[in-house]
Structures are given as C-alpha cells and as structure tokens.
Picture 1 (cartoon, helix red, strand yellow):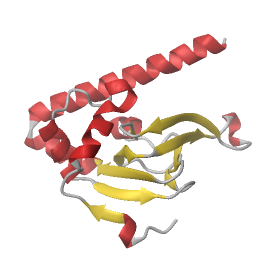
Picture 2: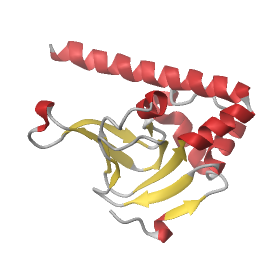
Picture 3: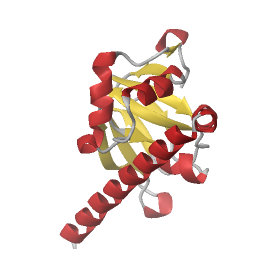
Length: 168
C-alpha cells in the first residue's frame, strides 16, 4: 500500500478539539494520567495520516515500532483464525480516543493483529524511539505514561475475560 505525501504530515500538536476524544478513549481510561502538556509533547512528535475505508494501518506479523492513536473515526482489529486458515475475524472496534500497538511497543514483538480503517479515519502514529526520547528527557512523564499504559492494558484484559466468561 503506497503512502501518499499528502496523506502524511508532521504535526506540531494535535488540535485542541481532538484532545478530549483521545483522552476519552475506552471510557476515559486511555492514558488518563497524562495532562494537556503531556499530550502536546506526544503529538508534537507524532505523524498524522488519514486512512481510507479498508486501508490497513498495521498488519499482523509486521515489526512493531509504534503506538497508534485514533484521532477521528473508527478502526477494526482483525486476527487470523487458529492455524491461519480462513478469513480474518474481527476482535474489536476502536473509536476516536483509542490506542493500539501497545503490546508490540512494550514487548518489542511482532504485531499481533491487523488494524484496518472502518470508513475514513485519522491516525496519529508515535514511533517508539520518539516516545523513549520523551521518557528519557522527562522521567516523571515516563511514570505517568507507563502507569496509564498499564491501566489501559488491564482494562482490556478485564473486558476480554468478561467476554470469555459470558461466552462459556
């Protein structure tokens, strides 16, 4: 999938009107410990891109080098069936304010699911190296960032556990 220059821009900060969407993600739990200055620092180091319906943002098995924030729109999280046969199935839908790519960010493993745009979607991509530099420059930010990431993952795991227990 070729990336067009007009689809990718370096942004100095996320527009103020989008910050509440990002902070609200998953019921206000995505990076809830970050303040407005933290968000501005993160997005000053990010790249914003518009994806069209069905376009892949990241693919299962690719190298994970980024965190992704859904600034506007909705994405579908897809995984292959066990054994890799058959069509991918939908694991989740993530709306504006959600984050994905956090597992690969933490464990440096390959991406575990494919994420595709569901309609037009605006994504802010933050490269791991840029986040690590921000953390090195401001260890207090690092504490807030990792605490928020841990809470986000905990909430997702609880949600998955709930779905599994309801399905059995």
